[in-house]
Image (cartoon, rainbow, N blue to C red; front, side):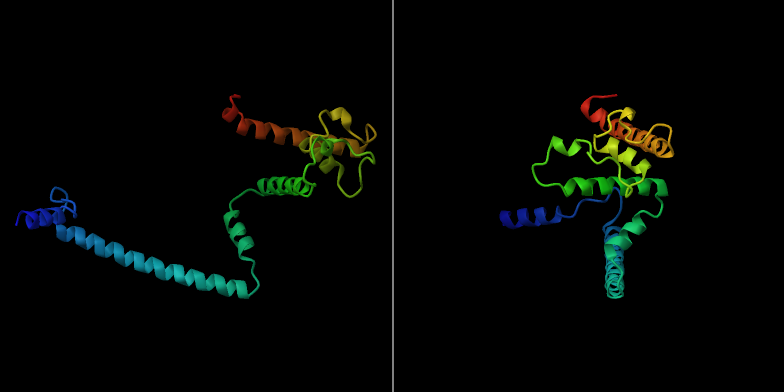
Length: 173
């Protein structure tokens, strides 16, 4: 008989005592409301899943669609910077395993027409090939030299931003 009373006592204590805050009826009412909302949420999730399946059948790339929705409020300049950084990372990723410092040596051929002078200046900084603005490969006082220098300055600003972001983590201020 003592064992039965102990089990009944423990079973009653499973539901928390809410007498100070609300009655058991109110608690059960909120449980029912919560269950109803959970069921409605599941219906919406199912509708979304069907819609995405339909979109995919219509030829929409869902990853790109999701990225566009995510980036709708991001400034176009920020998106361009992200794209440039992504291209830089792709260039790094395409290098053979084991490539080290030699990837930062300047090209022997000089600038190419395929990449704008501005972009070449930016990439010179971001790839470690343009430590100083004196490394401008274009003839001084030309439009290309000025464009390269503007890109170089943009690269320096990007590096400064990156250093400010990582500075506190490594003890810089």
